[in-house]
Length: 225
Image 1 (cartoon, rainbow, N blue to C red):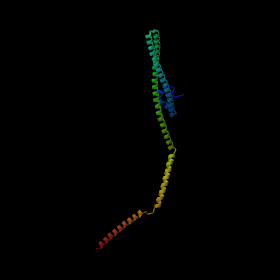
Image 2 (image 1 turned 90 degrees about the vertical axis):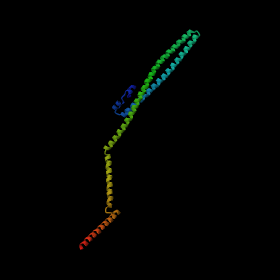
Image 3 (image 1 turned 30 degrees about the vertical axis):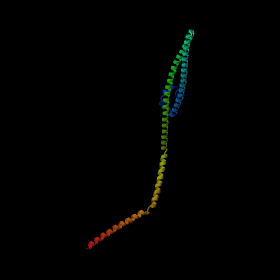
Image 4 (image 1 turned 180 degrees about the vertical axis):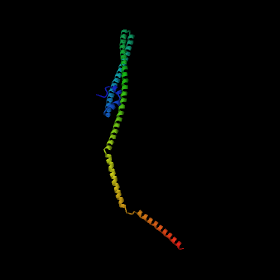
């Protein structure tokens, strides 16, 4: 059994309410769209048949009106020939054509009303269908987003991330150890920069020592005088 039992159920339906009650909203919205599309096909088919009926009725009306004119012409001819009996018979046939045309016009009015109603129904159904398809896209997007978030949560809670970070920390400690070993090999070894620094330091000490000797000599000379 379908979700909707008739066209008015679709037009008056509250899609939000239906989806809120559904256990699987994505599946439900697919069913709703399918039934709407099927109903739209039926309504359009009915519209096509009604339009065909209108065309046929219009054709019959035109035929009756032409026949009525023809009988009028025959009545005029009969009168011109002094055949009142034939003129009366022709007018009688004209009356039947007029009555038939009048009945067809009344029928055409009803058909036009049906066409107007069907056009309105098609428009309402298309609006509902467009709304359902928009909601379908939103539901699918939300479901994918929620599923992705759920997977992330599961991954975080499973300890996989912590384990991976722990491995990174182990690798970092190993690299630190290797760097320490490299630094240990360089301990006690003088670089070229170190040797030049020592030379500069020796020059400074020599200069300071010479200055001190000179100062002491000056004091000694002063005492002797």
